[in-house]
Length: 117
Figure 1 (cartoon, rainbow, N blue to C red):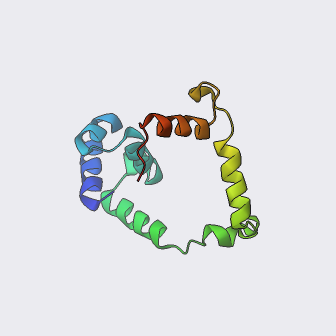
Figure 2 (figure 1 turned 90 degrees about the vertical axis):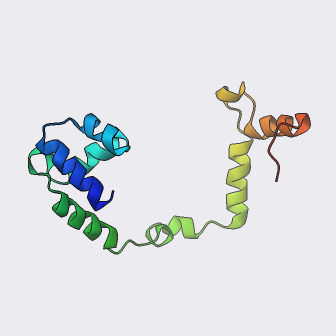
């Protein structure tokens, strides 16, 4: 969220508007605005500049890569990943009438409905 949007949130709260009303004005989802307000002091203590400072501080902190945090992921090989993808693509799904995504895609290709690059 940009500082100008945070200022709008602050003005909206000061005017007594609900998070949903502020959301309509900004074009963000209600959950985005609600989380922004909650993580930066709530309705009574929200300040745009403090929220901006907090957001910058959170964004700049050192974030270890996912592979650095999860050694079990580092042990996966491409063969392992291909096996996982094959298992997921060949598992029947209720949304597809208990057919697998691979079967649905094969039918789309056969009928010429699939977007193939």
